[in-house]
Image 1 (cartoon, rainbow, N blue to C red):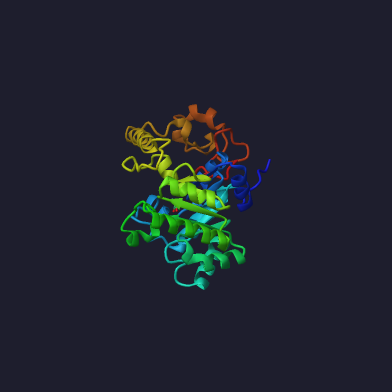
Image 2 (tube, rainbow, N blue to C red; image 1 turned 90 degrees about the horizontal axis):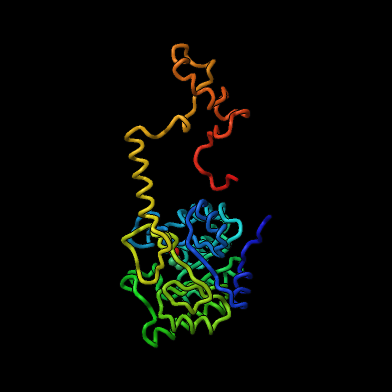
Length: 314
Ligand code: KIV
């Protein structure tokens, strides 16, 4: 049965009904399939991939081509969730024409259903033009990581009343320009709740308290992939770093002492194809392969030589 796609209209309706929106970052098809199965509403192909996938200290080095590559993978794995492509640093700041062309590439080549860009009132013309072209826009205000150097680091924003008013004005400006949702990152919970009340489009919080219409986390943070990174706003639901280390340690030990692969994990020649002098020593394995060439139509169960666990494989 085909589940219907989450759209920007679904998200608006969820806000109207008071249903909270669950969003996560996602960077590849395997995770997209899993998150889809858990009914995550929105998959953000965030430029945070520059930090969690590529190992940079900031999101600044990420290129548009890299974003398109990851968007394409996520779009292939996601059958239900709405896929948002993040516009990377300097892909939308130089001119409106350049920004329209770049956002178009995220949709046409990357398969994104909408784009996200950082900043508020300064981008109203761009947001209106994108929406007029049919490209839905998610805004992003507060702690905007692409302004790392301008902000002096990853710092909580909106702590004084002047800054809080500017955030509210930014949110209203984005709504007016036609944005369908806004990420509120790293701001006091009271301000996020006030913005959420004041606008009709959904707010998605990260480090912005419980008063938003939805929440987003970086997937690798939620899974505990980096056990030395635990900021206050992250809830770690797993300790995958530890579990992965344990699994890989076991694999390395099995390879070192010859315990992997076993006979059941190996393929063998049909008896009539074996060199005569070796046939006797492997005769006992005939039962396992049943005398069939691996991968042939009459191969016994378990004789599939398809490489890797393709996410699309039923
Ligand atoms: O790039 C990203 O992952 C983001 C989210 C953290 C909101 O912008």
